[in-house]
Image (cartoon, rainbow, N blue to C red):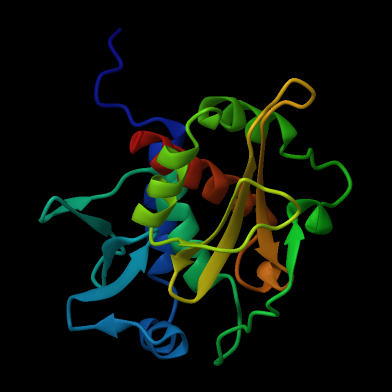
Amino acid sequence: MKKENIPDNYDLQVDIGRRIFMEYDQKLLIRKFGLEADDRWIYLTYLNTPCRISRADGQIDELLEGVWTECRDFSTVMTIYDLLCHHKGAAAPVLYHEWCTVGTFIVTGVQNTGTFTNKYAALFDGRLEELKAACINLGGRLEKRMAGADVTCKIPVTPFFPVLLQFWEGDDEFPPKLMLLWDRNAMSFLHFETTFYLQGDLAQRLLRQF
């Protein structure tokens, strides 16, 4: 029996996320995060890509090459919903402006992200200038070197939530290394699980520009 047109679990989760988003007070979210909106759409920028959210059904569109296109990417959609809906209360959470590793937030039984970062570090190795250009194309701003990193770049995920990317090229003694740093108050903006979605989405968007 053919299984054509049957959505996979990730696709189903996108639709579930849309329905959950519709349970939230949109006027509150707009005011809370200073978002632009009209009667049909809520607008925000995600990793330097203009996005809009339908006020009627929660669908997320991306502006790609001048055309609004529905986004069905699980990582993108779930990260946007979580950044808007995770925090409770009328006022937006505040950044502490102190960077830390994701390990700061790890709870018992949760694996670290070494396997993931090692994979992308190897793909970025020897392509330093391409990585810098890709970071800038995602809206990033190169910062002064930290801890000897060859690239240190602050990247706005949304206008109200940034991450810090660091990359060290490999040499005869050490393999290449990639690290994402998070604001110390990041867990007020998103769930811990969403850091995995976001870092994967960010790395893939960087790689696609190479």
